[in-house]
Length: 301
Image (cartoon, rainbow, N blue to C red):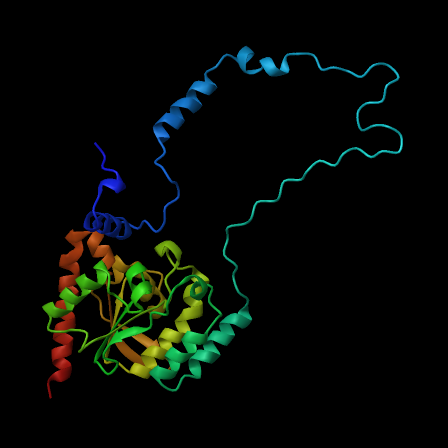
């Protein structure tokens, strides 16, 4: 038997709400549960009714006006009553900005002389539609002077609430992955391609990625890491200029080219993907061992 919310104590309600939030439920749509099975059964029952019964309302002959009598609304000098026009459905497509918006993003990013200036520019930037639906700017976390820079996709719910990248379940897994090779947030730098949470954690649109790419490229140029690790498809494809999927790219050392600088780069799987596919952790473990070896080579005189 289901337990009513009124029968729960504060701790039980908090645990239930936390479960819903972790499952991706952002808001309640109805005051009571809807039995979709019953609705479907009623629809099928209505379709199965005899045609004569369903058309009983229209089987009666229409009444005609008496001879020499004008029809309603047809008297001389009177216009027929206007019929209401249903409003056109609103398009659900995103508005793609023009070339000027992309040029403006590139110019703003290039004008940042420091990481602090870049953050300030992004805080006041209004060219990307995502910033209007997000609660906070999720800029970066960790040590900006670290030798390795991790770049993910976009913030999730917890990141949007706290303003810090990788603090949800995927972030907790990333912390454990870093610790396994002797790294932490004090010895690594972490950011995302997209600094604002997409509504409902949807995949960022192509124009949103392109608008944000100049800022993350400038971020890399200002931080000057010795190694860049791309977490997932979007970061890898955007920064490595390739159409290959992450399962084809991962585990291969490549170069992230920003201007005249080419930084060694390792594409690997995103921690959120590993939460859905735990068996693939072995692939990322191999990638992180390769990263650890490269970092040890950097520290060897």
